[in-house]
Length: 176
Image 1 (tube, rainbow, N blue to C red):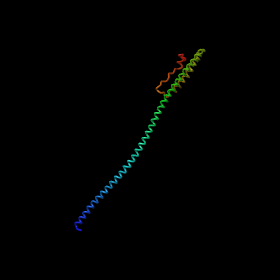
Image 2: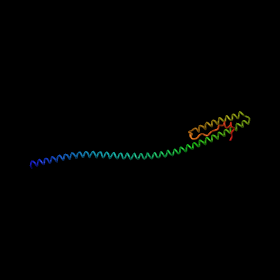
Image 3: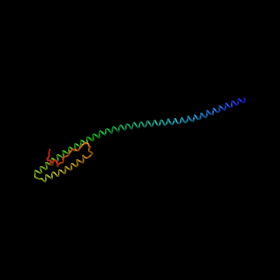
Image 4: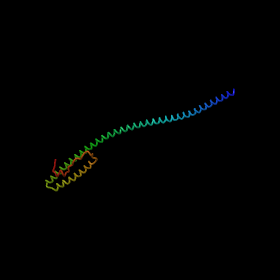
C-alpha cells in the first residue's frame, strides 16, 4: 500500500471513529432522556390512578352524604308535622281542661251559694259566712293548682278562658 492510500484509510478510520463516537454519545444521551421520560411517565400514571381512585371515593362519599341529607330532611319534615299536631292536640286538651275547671268553679260557686243561703235561712248568718270563707279558700287552692298545670309552655296563639271567681258569682246571685 502506498502512503497516500494509508493516509486516506487512516482519515477514513478517523472520520468513522468520530461519527461512531458521536453516535455513541447521542445514544447515551437519548437513553438517559428516555429513561427519565419513562420514569416521569410511570410516576404520572401512578399519580393519575391515585387521583382517580380518590375522586371515585369522594364521589361515593358525596353520594352517601347526599342520601343522609335526604333522609334527615324527610325526618325533619315528618317531625315538624308531628310537632305541629302534638301542639294542636295539647292546645285542645288545655282548652278542654280550662273549660272543665271553669264549669267546676261555677258549680262550686253554686253549691257554696246554696249552702250559704240555706245557712242564712236557718238563721245562722255566721255559719253562712264560715261556709263561704271555707269554700273560697278551697277554691283558691284549686285555682292555684290549675294555674300551675296550665302555665307549662302555653302557645302564644290562644288566650286562656276567662274564669269567674266564686265570690263574684255568689255576690251577683247568679245561678245557672
